[in-house]
Amino acid sequence: MSLFDLALIKKYDRSGPRYTSYPTANNFSAFTQTDYESQVALSNERQGPISLYCHIPFCDTVCFYCGCNKVVTKDKTKAEPYLAALFKEIDQQGALFDHSRQVEQMHFGGGTPTFLSNEQIMRLSEKLQSAFNFADEGEYSIEIDPRGVDEDTIKALAKARFNRISLGVQDFNEDVQKAVNRIQSFEQTKSVIDSARAHGFESVSIDLIYGLPKQSVETFKTTLKQVGELRPDRISLFNYAHLPELFKPQRRIDVLALPSADEKLAIFQYSMNFLLAQGYVYIGMDHFSLPEDPLAIAQREGHLYRNFQGYATHADCDIVGLGLSSIGQVGDSFSQNEKNIEQYYQRIEAGELPVIKGQLINNDDKIRRAVIMDLICHFELNFAKVEQAFDINFSEYFANALVELAEMHTDGLLVLDAHSIKVQEKGKLLIRNICMVFDAYLASSKTQFSKTI
Image (tube, rainbow, N blue to C red):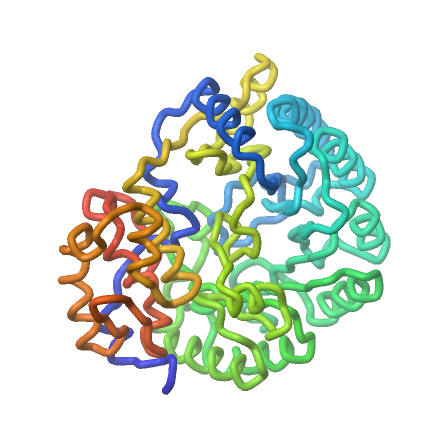
């Protein structure tokens, strides 16, 4: 049975969260340093491994589709004061956590982390290793822009303990690239990937976007063929959400050049069929991986998880967010750092952690998060598992949700019985819609989310 059912996709065409967390970040409210420190204390009691997320906000050019928290500048000297502040934050955070706990994951995101010089990346890595206890074997990844990376950079990243790279590509078509202000050749991209593999990097991930201006099924076929030649371990195929009222750079995109809704869906359908035919496994939402990749293995073995970086293999890690706008997940809480760079600097200079908002997770949140995580990661839910973990009667606790799911059962998105939910093939693309049924915050949310497909 095909994953793609056009009639159902159109019926359930609505906006909703991506569930990189539950509750989602739009629900965060005031959260103090005292709140955060009490959650670190709880986290230290529980022990368990640590994941570090480090946000580098700088980009030297602006991509018009981008909705990330970034500082666009060609002035490389701006990196040094940011690193000075970041180092102070690392010292503060490192002192809070029990040093016997090991870092099993690290991710540098942005912005463009490779805006930093090779020497700066090395210093930052060494600083993190001095403040935290790194496992000998871990997943250490970094987002890179192939346009500013050469073999020396790859060598420096390997020396800085990185073993996985993620590259933004979006589309190799030159007309599309001009329309979004990101000119990046296939040859540049291939050279960086070849270099990373030659220097022992364990995984290469590529980001693509469908729905960009000037795109069509025909143009994207060529991009997909070129991506197939590169054979990345993971592919993220994102839906472009045109929200110029939220993201200022998108105002520079010609709305008339965007593909129609039907053409956009056709691009997505072709892409999905192409990747599956190439042997990729559909992980969920917009993620694909080779069958031997740890993501696919974690899904098969039942311990795939989802966090602020997307799908992940380490469900038991507390996430320490470092740098501008970064989000952490520690103890029974989520927290987010200051988003304004000058105010971030002021908080650091005052000797404070730059945490400005977050959320304590209550028991209902934990129950609903467990349900959403099982569905979005494994496409099935065993009621008895939730009942035993939380001492509830599932059918009573989720009586209203089960009524909503009945229509999805009738439509063939899922099979619902007295014991479980099993998402069917044509329901997998609409997994966000299914998860939304269990979201207690959604009805009152005023946030403008992206479309689920």
